[in-house]
Length: 289
Image (cartoon, rainbow, N blue to C red; front, side, top):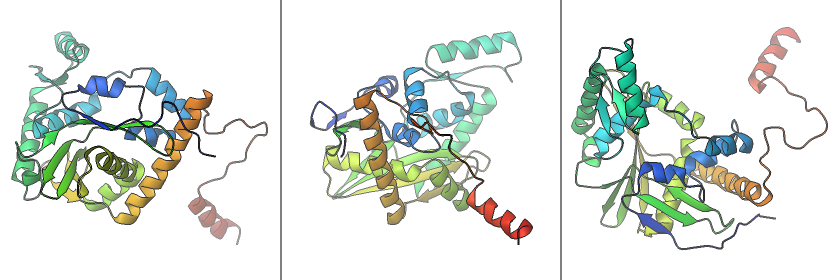
């Protein structure tokens, strides 16, 4: 039986101007990243802890956040720290002050990289027109209720571009290398196929467009900051939607019961574990044949 939550289904809503902090702090709804965290290799117990305990800023996200702001024209405030590195106490103090204020600190060399990456986006034959200033809306917050479980859901598309008969949801990501093989593995490892399906479903629910397409824009973080623009295969999106459905049922059950299990769950016997299937097959062939 599918677990449902109260209150019952409420109308979808699109909120323009909602801050990223307020969006991410909302505990009455679940986001795409939350759904992904509920499934392996995550688990409900870890999801709940991370949701209830604010995580400190991670420096490895600073560059991506800054380029995101530069490309979309909206996002985190950027503070340039006029030091070559963070070896001096004054530099570290300025960095920490920026974090405390909810801003992204960048060294001059990092700011130059952000500018170069933005320029590469603007000059790209596909990404440039997609992100052309004034042609779309950045970071609108969309809320709707999943009718199967009663779970309130939320998404925050990077860039919504509404064309005659078509709404484009363009998602910008920085990555170590934007070569298609690495992008394909990132989609698998970070469950971006779940994000595609969830965002598409949210846009359908709230905006009721004639058609929706979700487009990934991946950009390398190393010069010359190459870009790969792709749409997901239909089968992958279907898998992502099935994963979302399972995660929504899990979330509804956890919220209803107050029980947030780890990977093992409520068992009394110690489970067995095995090596990955490929390793079992390889080592069986090498040592047991």
